Image 1 (cartoon, rainbow, N blue to C red):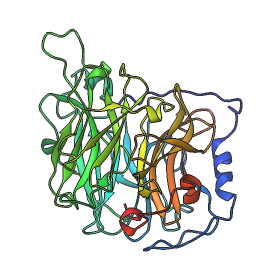
Image 2 (image 1 turned 30 degrees about the horizontal axis):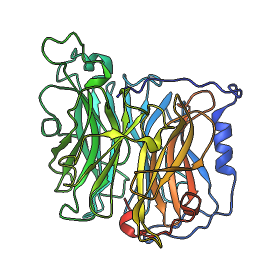
Image 3 (image 1 turned 30 degrees about the vertical axis):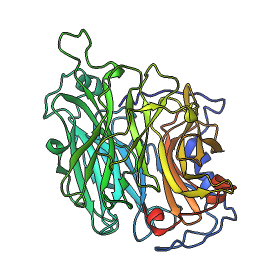
Length: 433
């Protein structure tokens, strides 16, 4: 996954992140508290909150946010609770906090999947539209094994990456034990494997409506006779896994198997466009192509890609990092042109993880405009959610000295990120994703 820590020091390096960020929670504005079609109304005036702060709640670090809104209107903020610091390996649990007021207040931290000394992470939650159940897909490896060792093929199948699924039937209050699905969603020769991270996708239109799709990534072994070890970025590739029965059985969807080093598709996120196609945006892990983002489209529900991943110049300001995408609806103008309205989130400095921002596209991702910069501070991974009919939520890593001091939640009024774009498509199927 290549989630190496990159430090970014600001002049306020001595400041305490919890004081600064919690200050945002206490600052109240005049945001409109309109209730969504289902579930409770958000608390009046809440602008932000900080669900996770390093060192609070039993974990020295929290990373890898993912967020969904349940059918009943609760927000579930998932993260990795890391017991050994900010590193990707070691003792890692998947944790969750639940909010019933739009992301202002949160229930206590609960462990969803306990690593018990091993690594459980990469949460990819999705709400099953047929039942309202929350389905959580995640990844696992032996806590003593590092990503570098797995990439180099120095971890056996029992110690390497494996894939699990869980389910909540009570609106995220509890989850079933992890059930392994590795054999169904991997291919021979794969080494690394990572689900998401970030929310997964439930298809709501077309012949495959109801399908649950999880964007994921993997690595492959070098060809026989190659001097490469497998740690080279060119051996990463994106893929998808999907279920057509509510998460009970799973299959491998498309597989990005082009390893020429031009685009090294890694962590990805997906939306369904109004015409039923799927749009994928991915982290480009040090490919030779311009920029650090790539995009692809699938016309068959994620079973294959129409064309291989290609550079995404509209997001050239983003560094090498995970990013999120959210579908808001559809736009039509007087000239008759139409396009899906998408939001993207991620840091907005190409060489460093800092300055979290939101971009808007009105043409299905072909172009994008940065419409909001949340803060100049260090920032890294993020996940977007439709918090209610009038609000977009962003769960993201941030801090003052480095990006991994906290995971904050920002409520953004829809008008701020749509501006002149008509608010079409704000239906329960979009709100409840």
